[in-house]
Length: 114
Image (cartoon, rainbow, N blue to C red; front, side, top):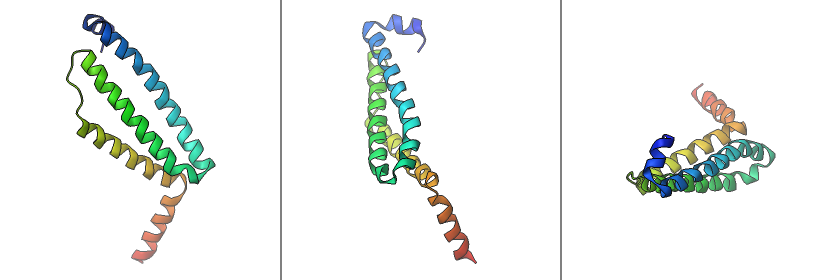
């Protein structure tokens, strides 16, 4: 939303929009920290994926509340959970690639086709 739209929507919208910066900072922290911690300790992978999914869900819930505060329809839980699930799956796939597991899978597939 543009600043003038937020101002017109009222104080609750203004306060809700201000929370977005906190979620943006958390998101950037996750983007930087997750690969570093994955490489540092593969044992943290389940906890990292779980924490990222929980933070992703919280971010999307906050976005839904912000929409309501600004006069828009709330996001329904189904699409939110679908997006969180998709992102967790992508995260698991990227983690496998970060750890080099992707190359092992490709090698096994190549060897099995010979």
